[in-house]
View 1 (tube, one colour):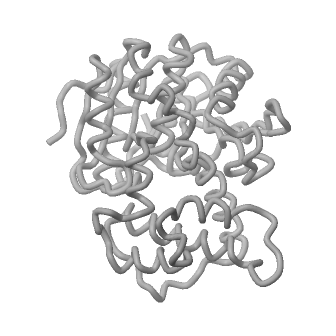
View 2 (cartoon, rainbow, N blue to C red):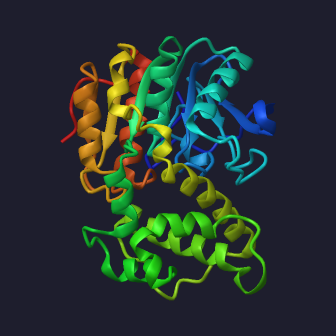
Length: 333
Protein backbone atom coordinates (compact mmCIF):
# COMPACT_ATOMS: atom_id res chain seq x y z
CA UNK A 1 0.00 0.00 0.00
CA UNK A 2 1.41 3.39 -1.00
CA UNK A 3 1.51 6.24 1.58
CA UNK A 4 -1.18 8.91 1.52
CA UNK A 5 0.18 12.47 1.59
CA UNK A 6 -1.01 15.30 3.86
CA UNK A 7 -3.19 16.53 0.98
CA UNK A 8 -5.27 13.37 1.37
CA UNK A 9 -4.11 12.16 -2.05
CA UNK A 10 -1.65 9.50 -3.15
CA UNK A 11 1.66 10.69 -4.60
CA UNK A 12 1.86 11.61 -8.26
CA UNK A 13 2.80 8.67 -10.50
CA UNK A 14 3.49 8.57 -14.21
CA UNK A 15 1.53 6.33 -16.60
CA UNK A 16 3.35 3.15 -17.44
CA UNK A 17 1.67 2.88 -20.82
CA UNK A 18 -0.18 5.23 -23.18
CA UNK A 19 -2.29 4.44 -26.22
CA UNK A 20 -3.60 6.29 -29.25
CA UNK A 21 -6.74 4.29 -29.98
CA UNK A 22 -8.54 4.93 -33.24
CA UNK A 23 -12.31 4.91 -32.99
CA UNK A 24 -14.92 5.48 -35.73
CA UNK A 25 -15.40 8.80 -37.54
CA UNK A 26 -11.74 9.83 -37.49
CA UNK A 27 -11.34 10.33 -33.74
CA UNK A 28 -8.21 9.09 -31.93
CA UNK A 29 -8.46 8.66 -28.15
CA UNK A 30 -5.58 9.32 -25.79
CA UNK A 31 -5.61 6.59 -23.14
CA UNK A 32 -3.26 6.18 -20.17
CA UNK A 33 -2.64 3.26 -17.82
CA UNK A 34 -1.06 3.83 -14.43
CA UNK A 35 -0.66 2.03 -11.11
CA UNK A 36 -0.17 -1.74 -10.89
CA UNK A 37 -0.74 -3.61 -14.18
CA UNK A 38 -2.01 -6.57 -12.14
CA UNK A 39 -4.17 -4.47 -9.81
CA UNK A 40 -7.91 -3.90 -9.62
CA UNK A 41 -8.99 -2.49 -12.96
CA UNK A 42 -10.63 0.95 -12.76
CA UNK A 43 -11.59 3.45 -15.44
CA UNK A 44 -11.69 7.18 -14.66
CA UNK A 45 -14.19 9.33 -16.57
CA UNK A 46 -13.36 13.03 -16.63
CA UNK A 47 -15.81 15.89 -16.44
CA UNK A 48 -16.77 18.67 -18.75
CA UNK A 49 -17.72 17.38 -21.23
CA UNK A 50 -14.51 18.33 -22.98
CA UNK A 51 -12.19 18.78 -19.99
CA UNK A 52 -9.84 15.82 -20.44
CA UNK A 53 -8.28 13.64 -17.78
CA UNK A 54 -5.64 14.99 -15.39
CA UNK A 55 -2.98 13.66 -13.00
CA UNK A 56 -5.23 14.61 -10.06
CA UNK A 57 -7.82 12.00 -10.99
CA UNK A 58 -5.42 9.08 -10.66
CA UNK A 59 -4.13 10.32 -7.29
CA UNK A 60 -7.34 9.12 -5.61
CA UNK A 61 -6.12 5.55 -6.23
CA UNK A 62 -3.51 3.54 -4.37
CA UNK A 63 -1.02 2.86 -7.19
CA UNK A 64 0.05 -0.35 -5.47
CA UNK A 65 -3.47 -1.81 -5.66
CA UNK A 66 -5.15 -0.37 -8.77
CA UNK A 67 -4.67 -0.48 -12.52
CA UNK A 68 -6.07 2.92 -13.48
CA UNK A 69 -7.23 3.59 -17.03
CA UNK A 70 -7.71 7.25 -17.93
CA UNK A 71 -9.44 8.16 -21.18
CA UNK A 72 -9.62 11.54 -22.89
CA UNK A 73 -13.08 11.49 -24.46
CA UNK A 74 -13.72 12.58 -28.05
CA UNK A 75 -12.57 16.13 -28.66
CA UNK A 76 -11.04 16.43 -25.16
CA UNK A 77 -7.55 16.62 -23.71
CA UNK A 78 -4.98 14.93 -25.90
CA UNK A 79 -7.49 13.08 -28.03
CA UNK A 80 -7.61 14.14 -31.67
CA UNK A 81 -8.99 16.23 -33.23
CA UNK A 82 -9.18 18.37 -30.11
CA UNK A 83 -12.34 20.43 -29.77
CA UNK A 84 -14.15 18.52 -32.52
CA UNK A 85 -17.93 18.29 -32.19
CA UNK A 86 -18.68 16.31 -35.36
CA UNK A 87 -19.63 12.72 -34.56
CA UNK A 88 -19.30 13.53 -30.89
CA UNK A 89 -22.36 12.55 -28.88
CA UNK A 90 -22.94 10.50 -25.75
CA UNK A 91 -23.77 7.42 -27.81
CA UNK A 92 -20.32 7.66 -29.42
CA UNK A 93 -18.64 7.90 -26.00
CA UNK A 94 -20.47 4.78 -24.85
CA UNK A 95 -19.30 2.87 -27.92
CA UNK A 96 -15.77 4.16 -27.30
CA UNK A 97 -15.78 2.84 -23.74
CA UNK A 98 -16.68 -0.61 -25.00
CA UNK A 99 -13.96 -0.49 -27.62
CA UNK A 100 -11.30 0.66 -25.13
CA UNK A 101 -12.34 -1.95 -22.59
CA UNK A 102 -12.07 -4.70 -25.20
CA UNK A 103 -8.79 -3.39 -26.58
CA UNK A 104 -7.23 -3.30 -23.11
CA UNK A 105 -8.69 -6.69 -22.18
CA UNK A 106 -10.72 -5.46 -19.22
CA UNK A 107 -13.87 -7.63 -19.02
CA UNK A 108 -15.15 -5.64 -16.02
CA UNK A 109 -13.97 -2.50 -14.31
CA UNK A 110 -14.70 -0.21 -11.41
CA UNK A 111 -16.10 2.98 -12.96
CA UNK A 112 -15.15 6.25 -11.28
CA UNK A 113 -16.46 9.58 -12.53
CA UNK A 114 -16.94 13.14 -11.35
CA UNK A 115 -19.46 15.73 -12.52
CA UNK A 116 -20.13 14.94 -16.22
CA UNK A 117 -17.90 11.89 -15.69
CA UNK A 118 -20.37 10.61 -13.09
CA UNK A 119 -23.21 11.16 -15.58
CA UNK A 120 -21.34 9.21 -18.25
CA UNK A 121 -20.59 6.48 -15.71
CA UNK A 122 -24.32 6.02 -15.08
CA UNK A 123 -25.07 5.95 -18.82
CA UNK A 124 -22.28 3.42 -19.32
CA UNK A 125 -23.63 1.20 -16.54
CA UNK A 126 -27.08 1.26 -18.16
CA UNK A 127 -25.58 0.58 -21.59
CA UNK A 128 -23.21 -2.23 -20.55
CA UNK A 129 -24.21 -3.41 -17.07
CA UNK A 130 -22.16 -6.58 -17.42
CA UNK A 131 -18.97 -4.50 -17.72
CA UNK A 132 -19.38 -2.64 -14.42
CA UNK A 133 -17.95 -4.06 -11.19
CA UNK A 134 -18.78 -1.00 -9.07
CA UNK A 135 -19.62 2.71 -9.37
CA UNK A 136 -18.05 5.63 -7.50
CA UNK A 137 -19.77 8.88 -8.48
CA UNK A 138 -18.51 12.28 -7.33
CA UNK A 139 -20.73 15.36 -7.74
CA UNK A 140 -23.12 13.72 -10.18
CA UNK A 141 -24.63 16.01 -12.82
CA UNK A 142 -28.13 15.63 -14.22
CA UNK A 143 -28.38 17.16 -17.72
CA UNK A 144 -31.83 18.57 -17.14
CA UNK A 145 -33.01 21.86 -18.63
CA UNK A 146 -33.36 23.54 -15.23
CA UNK A 147 -29.87 22.58 -14.07
CA UNK A 148 -28.29 23.80 -17.30
CA UNK A 149 -30.26 27.04 -17.42
CA UNK A 150 -29.42 27.75 -13.79
CA UNK A 151 -25.70 27.70 -14.56
CA UNK A 152 -26.00 30.16 -17.43
CA UNK A 153 -28.66 32.47 -16.00
CA UNK A 154 -27.64 32.57 -12.33
CA UNK A 155 -31.25 32.60 -11.22
CA UNK A 156 -30.17 31.98 -7.61
CA UNK A 157 -27.81 35.01 -7.42
CA UNK A 158 -24.91 32.90 -6.15
CA UNK A 159 -22.15 35.39 -6.97
CA UNK A 160 -23.59 38.64 -8.34
CA UNK A 161 -20.30 40.40 -9.16
CA UNK A 162 -18.82 37.35 -10.87
CA UNK A 163 -22.08 36.83 -12.73
CA UNK A 164 -22.00 40.41 -13.98
CA UNK A 165 -18.50 39.87 -15.38
CA UNK A 166 -19.60 36.65 -17.10
CA UNK A 167 -22.73 38.24 -18.55
CA UNK A 168 -20.77 41.24 -19.82
CA UNK A 169 -19.01 38.97 -22.32
CA UNK A 170 -22.36 38.48 -24.07
CA UNK A 171 -24.34 41.26 -25.83
CA UNK A 172 -27.40 42.30 -23.80
CA UNK A 173 -29.86 41.08 -26.43
CA UNK A 174 -28.41 37.54 -26.15
CA UNK A 175 -28.27 37.22 -22.37
CA UNK A 176 -31.68 35.57 -22.24
CA UNK A 177 -30.02 32.54 -23.94
CA UNK A 178 -26.37 32.66 -22.94
CA UNK A 179 -25.66 29.06 -23.87
CA UNK A 180 -26.78 29.44 -27.47
CA UNK A 181 -24.65 32.56 -27.93
CA UNK A 182 -21.60 30.95 -26.30
CA UNK A 183 -21.94 27.80 -28.40
CA UNK A 184 -22.06 29.83 -31.60
CA UNK A 185 -19.23 32.13 -30.56
CA UNK A 186 -16.92 29.24 -29.67
CA UNK A 187 -17.14 27.70 -33.11
CA UNK A 188 -14.24 27.94 -35.55
CA UNK A 189 -13.25 29.71 -37.65
CA UNK A 190 -13.72 33.29 -36.56
CA UNK A 191 -12.13 36.02 -38.67
CA UNK A 192 -11.95 39.77 -38.93
CA UNK A 193 -12.79 41.99 -35.98
CA UNK A 194 -14.22 39.04 -34.00
CA UNK A 195 -11.11 36.86 -34.28
CA UNK A 196 -10.56 36.90 -30.50
CA UNK A 197 -14.22 36.32 -29.61
CA UNK A 198 -13.82 32.58 -28.82
CA UNK A 199 -10.96 33.29 -26.42
CA UNK A 200 -12.87 36.08 -24.67
CA UNK A 201 -15.91 33.86 -24.23
CA UNK A 202 -13.85 30.91 -23.02
CA UNK A 203 -12.04 33.07 -20.46
CA UNK A 204 -15.33 34.48 -19.15
CA UNK A 205 -16.84 31.00 -18.88
CA UNK A 206 -13.73 29.68 -17.13
CA UNK A 207 -13.78 32.49 -14.57
CA UNK A 208 -17.47 31.93 -13.80
CA UNK A 209 -17.01 28.19 -13.49
CA UNK A 210 -14.03 28.56 -11.18
CA UNK A 211 -15.95 30.99 -8.97
CA UNK A 212 -18.83 28.54 -8.56
CA UNK A 213 -16.57 25.51 -8.13
CA UNK A 214 -14.44 26.99 -5.37
CA UNK A 215 -17.09 29.10 -3.68
CA UNK A 216 -14.95 32.24 -3.64
CA UNK A 217 -15.20 35.10 -6.15
CA UNK A 218 -12.13 35.58 -8.34
CA UNK A 219 -10.50 38.97 -8.63
CA UNK A 220 -11.72 41.03 -11.56
CA UNK A 221 -8.06 41.90 -12.18
CA UNK A 222 -6.99 38.28 -12.57
CA UNK A 223 -4.75 38.04 -15.65
CA UNK A 224 -5.76 35.97 -18.62
CA UNK A 225 -3.97 32.66 -19.18
CA UNK A 226 -1.47 32.50 -22.02
CA UNK A 227 -2.66 32.03 -25.58
CA UNK A 228 -2.02 28.29 -25.63
CA UNK A 229 -4.11 27.79 -22.48
CA UNK A 230 -6.87 29.99 -23.86
CA UNK A 231 -6.98 27.98 -27.07
CA UNK A 232 -7.33 24.79 -25.01
CA UNK A 233 -10.20 26.41 -23.08
CA UNK A 234 -11.91 27.35 -26.35
CA UNK A 235 -11.77 23.72 -27.47
CA UNK A 236 -12.97 22.51 -24.08
CA UNK A 237 -15.98 24.81 -23.94
CA UNK A 238 -16.83 24.25 -27.59
CA UNK A 239 -17.34 20.57 -26.79
CA UNK A 240 -19.12 21.35 -23.53
CA UNK A 241 -21.56 23.80 -25.10
CA UNK A 242 -22.26 21.29 -27.88
CA UNK A 243 -23.27 18.70 -25.28
CA UNK A 244 -25.22 21.06 -23.04
CA UNK A 245 -27.23 22.46 -25.95
CA UNK A 246 -28.51 18.92 -26.53
CA UNK A 247 -28.83 18.05 -22.82
CA UNK A 248 -26.09 15.51 -23.45
CA UNK A 249 -28.55 13.39 -25.46
CA UNK A 250 -29.77 11.96 -22.16
CA UNK A 251 -33.26 13.43 -21.96
CA UNK A 252 -35.28 11.03 -24.12
CA UNK A 253 -35.77 9.12 -21.93
CA UNK A 254 -34.30 11.13 -19.06
CA UNK A 255 -31.22 9.67 -17.40
CA UNK A 256 -33.12 9.00 -14.17
CA UNK A 257 -35.52 6.76 -16.06
CA UNK A 258 -32.64 4.66 -17.37
CA UNK A 259 -31.30 3.67 -13.97
CA UNK A 260 -33.61 0.72 -13.33
CA UNK A 261 -31.33 -1.54 -15.38
CA UNK A 262 -28.16 -0.71 -13.46
CA UNK A 263 -26.32 -3.75 -12.07
CA UNK A 264 -26.58 -4.40 -8.34
CA UNK A 265 -22.95 -3.64 -7.62
CA UNK A 266 -21.38 -1.42 -4.95
CA UNK A 267 -22.50 2.12 -5.80
CA UNK A 268 -21.49 5.21 -3.85
CA UNK A 269 -22.34 8.86 -4.49
CA UNK A 270 -20.20 11.56 -2.89
CA UNK A 271 -21.61 15.08 -3.05
CA UNK A 272 -21.21 18.36 -1.23
CA UNK A 273 -24.31 20.14 -0.02
CA UNK A 274 -22.75 23.45 -1.09
CA UNK A 275 -21.99 22.36 -4.66
CA UNK A 276 -23.07 25.34 -6.79
CA UNK A 277 -22.53 23.66 -10.18
CA UNK A 278 -24.14 20.24 -9.75
CA UNK A 279 -27.21 20.48 -7.57
CA UNK A 280 -27.28 18.32 -4.42
CA UNK A 281 -30.90 17.52 -5.32
CA UNK A 282 -29.57 15.67 -8.35
CA UNK A 283 -27.48 13.34 -6.21
CA UNK A 284 -30.48 12.72 -3.96
CA UNK A 285 -32.65 11.90 -6.98
CA UNK A 286 -30.09 9.43 -8.36
CA UNK A 287 -29.72 7.81 -4.95
CA UNK A 288 -33.48 7.35 -4.66
CA UNK A 289 -33.62 5.66 -8.08
CA UNK A 290 -30.80 3.20 -7.28
CA UNK A 291 -32.06 1.16 -4.36
CA UNK A 292 -28.70 -0.41 -3.56
CA UNK A 293 -26.73 2.86 -3.66
CA UNK A 294 -25.21 4.89 -0.83
CA UNK A 295 -25.11 8.69 -0.69
CA UNK A 296 -22.55 10.41 1.50
CA UNK A 297 -22.49 14.17 1.95
CA UNK A 298 -19.06 15.80 2.02
CA UNK A 299 -19.35 19.09 3.86
CA UNK A 300 -17.76 22.25 2.51
CA UNK A 301 -16.17 20.82 -0.63
CA UNK A 302 -18.22 22.72 -3.19
CA UNK A 303 -17.53 21.35 -6.65
CA UNK A 304 -13.77 21.10 -6.13
CA UNK A 305 -12.37 17.55 -6.55
CA UNK A 306 -9.10 18.61 -4.90
CA UNK A 307 -10.76 20.00 -1.77
CA UNK A 308 -9.22 18.09 1.20
CA UNK A 309 -12.62 16.82 2.37
CA UNK A 310 -13.55 15.47 -1.05
CA UNK A 311 -10.07 14.10 -1.75
CA UNK A 312 -10.10 12.26 1.59
CA UNK A 313 -13.57 10.88 0.92
CA UNK A 314 -12.56 9.60 -2.51
CA UNK A 315 -9.37 8.01 -1.21
CA UNK A 316 -11.18 6.39 1.73
CA UNK A 317 -13.86 4.93 -0.56
CA UNK A 318 -11.30 3.51 -2.99
CA UNK A 319 -9.13 2.14 -0.19
CA UNK A 320 -12.19 0.40 1.24
CA UNK A 321 -13.08 -1.07 -2.14
CA UNK A 322 -9.53 -2.34 -2.66
CA UNK A 323 -9.50 -3.97 0.77
CA UNK A 324 -13.06 -5.26 1.08
CA UNK A 325 -14.79 -5.08 -2.32
CA UNK A 326 -17.21 -2.37 -1.15
CA UNK A 327 -17.14 1.32 -0.22
CA UNK A 328 -17.97 0.87 3.46
CA UNK A 329 -21.34 1.30 5.11
CA UNK A 330 -20.93 4.26 7.45
CA UNK A 331 -22.50 7.51 6.19
CA UNK A 332 -20.39 10.64 6.40
CA UNK A 333 -21.62 13.46 8.68
